[in-house]
Length: 207
Image 1: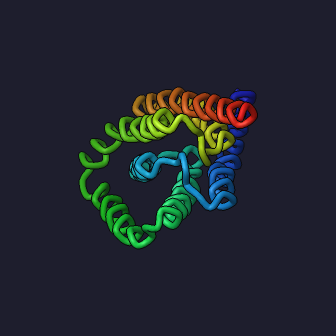
Image 2: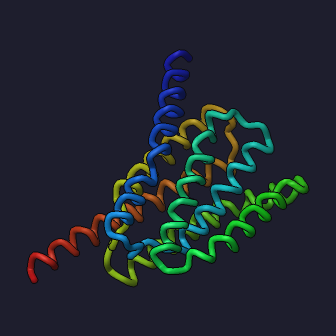
């Protein structure tokens, strides 16, 4: 029992620590290049929506804070990424529209129990759609552009850790399915990014 508690603590702490800097590699890569090439805006918007739904669901049902404490941090980092993408795309004025939509949607989630339950049922599909959107962006361009492999590697680990913490604490099936799905898709994006980064480097050397 003591060993299980220790593993649970390590999983929670390591996940929180990684999530505090999860998007930093992606942010720094974009700022250095002054470009959002390869980073899908649609994917980020879907991911942000999934994070907001998931955080609201966990708080609504009073789940243990250590099992979702990283989500406010991830949301803040995604908002910063969104602003950077809009800035480099020359459409920063749209940030006000996105702010109104996300705040309004968040308020709507907790109006009725069935709304948050339904939203959580769709959360896995929303988050999965965000990964497929990023994959499609990579497949179309055949170039990793400014996508950070390190960010996707850390995201893969945190989802694996969350599979363990979910099994050890709440045992919520919806949450567990979400993390298993996200682990698989994060790993898929990571491998795709690494492939195109290596392929791109090889092409440049040949030129």
